Image (cartoon, rainbow, N blue to C red; front, side):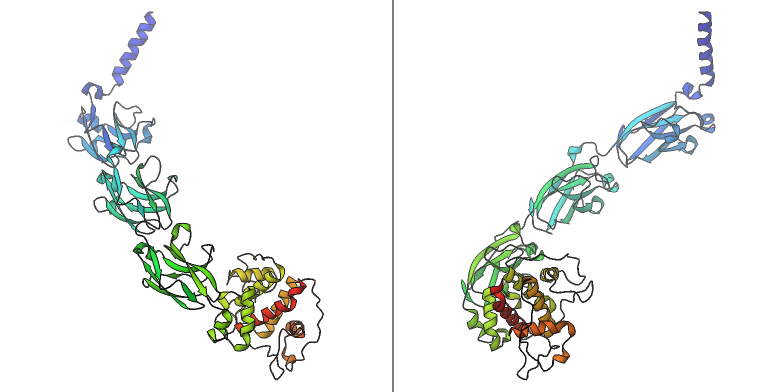
Length: 514
């Protein structure tokens, strides 16, 4: 018992001997308040210390409450570096949480003599923030008036900003950056709405980071093509003749719709949005556009879209229009420079679906490799009854044309190299004969390949070796003919009207051999 009492007294004596004089002077740390915003000025005052204590290295540091090791300080300083009244001002950390100012007797002491706890927060009351938009629905790329109320200038310094997300998106999946509050005019800013239609939210974040902790408030909104107004168009009549000009006057389009590519196009009735009969005309040059009527009679749809993206959501208005007349009557007038001899073949090819509107013009001009690939695919589909598939989209570096890739997959056409097709190069008469010959064998693999009664052209010595068989075969069936002088002219360019005529004659000759 006496030993225990002696041990306790001894420990008390040791403690008194090593206890710094802070205890006697009752050192204190005081702050101007207990809760600060990130980046806010913190005023600290220390009292109860003597010059002798300061000279021995008394110091203080800022610590996160969870930091146990003295060396884990956010920052620290010696008391001798403080003002004469032992006050110090510093910026609050940007990381919220509970912090402490710890006072140490000297540089070597591991345990603080005095601690003062305080709190760093992103905001004092989250419901103080208000995020407003001038409307609930916008058109694509339309300017949105955004205003943030309740933010402190400290938040702007910390990187507070607004950002656009698709509705329900996680914080890491931003659709579009908005603007920093530091660049706003008293919390007001103009931000472009998203390009894509859909539901969105505008979110306010209190720092540069976007996460659950820095998120403050959000405001939902939508982007739609029909934000306001009731756009439509008017026509001078309901029925037009083949290839007649159709004047279309569009009403009540908004500037945002025009800026995002509002357009009007003609479609076969019921056709998909991405399958216009002609390429739609945009409305950037005025409210009136002129479009040529198709050369195929029937009932069509004129459609007005609010954007260059043509889909259900962008369709503003549509109406039917009748196209009347007969192609033969149109072409006999010399339409698009067509030759009289070509009219019967072209009209028959139209009726059979061996040609579409894209080639019913510039009849006397040379046909390109891509244009003939289109005709070859039409002929193959007519002979087989099946729609061919495309080669890989990356087959050629200079074209991704659907018909080129379908004809390539059928082995009707080939590239000029392994990676280039030269879609706009003109086709010679012997090259077209070869591709037409391949189309026949691909479509009708059991076809008799023997050559009968070929024409003995006067310039056969000029035929390329690879074209000789095709020219003999097709001339034997009367599909290709020469000039009145008996020449074939293999290196001459083939015209569009001649190519259509050859495709039609090929079908008429072999349609019963399917």
